[in-house]
Structure formats: structure tokens, C-alpha cells
Image (cartoon, rainbow, N blue to C red; front, side):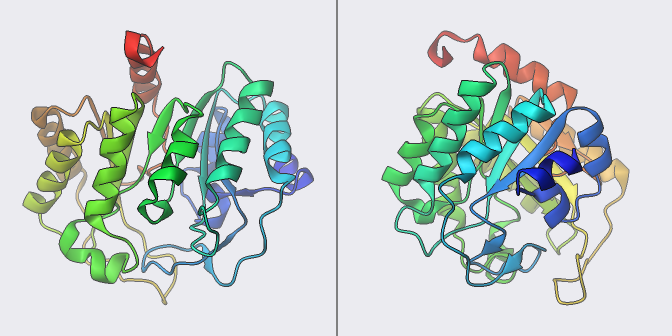
Amino acid sequence: MRGIVRRHGLHTVCEEALCPNLGDCWQHGRATVMILGNRCTRRCGFCNVNSAQPAAPDNSEPARVAAAIADMKLDEVVLTSVTRDDLPDGGAQLWAETITRIRALCSDICIEALIPDFRGDPDALKTVFRTRPDILAHNLETVPSLYPIVRPQADYSRALDILKTANRHGLIAKTGIMVGLGESFSQVVEVMRDAQVCGCSIFTIGQYLQPSREHLPVRRYVEPAEFEHYRHAGLELGLPLVVSGPLVRSSYHSDEQSALVRRLKERPHLA
């Protein structure tokens, strides 16, 4: 897997974000490919991706991504990207071309598009939505009160609007948060309630781990039993699937998620 990624000159969040699940996911035919380079125009307090002036988009990247995924013979792929506030469309057109090219080479693959907020631009969002990824994911990341320190250039209401719009377009909406940054149990439940109201089908919860001394510190290591309480609370709110555990990450593809996506895709309005 690593050799194919290098040969095609790609980036993966698995490596860039120091994901603890890299070995498990790659072994099971799952990977998270990061497009639009590896430099982000935003600087979130939790993220290990490099924050610097990015290079111009590479128009050959969609074809290279599709070829690499075909070589990997993946069953499931998560596409994500750095945030490109320097581009007029936030990179939406390159997003759309990448999904289209993957579909052309790998018609049966499950594609999850874990998108940035595109500054809430409705045209940019529609550009991606029209490609019909199997899952449209956009992470809330944390509770609203922590946005100023965790992701100061993002907006909680805008993130909810993206999930709501994805659901209105008939897409399977997914979101996730980290815990251990100073949030309360009730605040996490309230975020799950907001996600459920927006039509989210999949919600992930994982432990925040500090990537370096320059990043936000871990305020608390959440016990496994509390993750289970979160899962039950989300299901009681009406979320179809809540994947909750210390090492769960937003791009994590569980067997439960794969089964849920197959069921939801059979609904008439998702055909």
C-alpha cells in the first residue's frame, strides 16, 4: 500500500495525521487519500497536517488518485483534503473530477467524501454533491463552545448546514467529534442531537491525542465505559449508527458502517 501511494505521488491522512489505525485499515483494504496537496490554509489546534502556503492544484492528481486506488484494489476509500481557502471554489472542481475518475475505474468501490467547508459556498458544495459519493462526511470536530480554540477559522452553524444540505440532496451524511478537549458529557449529547436533526446517519466519537507539544493538550483521557455511554445516548436520539471508542477516527470504516451504507443505498431516493 505504501509503495503504491509513493509511486503515484499521493498523500494519505493515515500518514499525515499520524493515525493510530493505519495498519488495521490498510490491512483490510481501506485507505484515506488526501487531495489538493498536504498544506492547509487553516491552522486548527488539534491537527497535525502542515499549515503553510499551499502549492497550486495539480490537475493530474485526479487521474493519479484513481489509478492508485485501482492498483490498491480497495473495497472502500475515504477522500479528504486540506482546506484551500486560497482557491475561488475551495478546490471543489478537483474534488468532483477525482470522484468521477475513481468511479470510472472502480465502479463497485464505496467512496466516502470527507469534505472541508468550502467556506459554505453553495455552488462549491453542489459541485461535489452532484458526483454522488456513497457517504458525504463533514466533521463537527468538537462542541460549539470550544470552536474558538480548537478550530477558530470554522463555524459550527455552517458545519451543521453542510450536513443538512447533504441530507436534502439524498446523500448519506456522516460527522464526528473528538473528546478529551474539555467538553462535558451533556455538550457531546447536544452535538449528537444537532447532527440527528440535520439528518446524519453516521456519528463517530474518538479520543483526542496531542500530535505534538505545539498542539492543544489533552484535558482528559476518556474511559472506555464513557464511550459506550455516548454510543447508547446517540442511538437513543435516533442516530442510525454511532461508532464510539478511544481509537475511532472520523475516516474509520467499521463493518457496521459498511452494512448500513448498503442498506441505505437500497432506498429509492438514493438510487
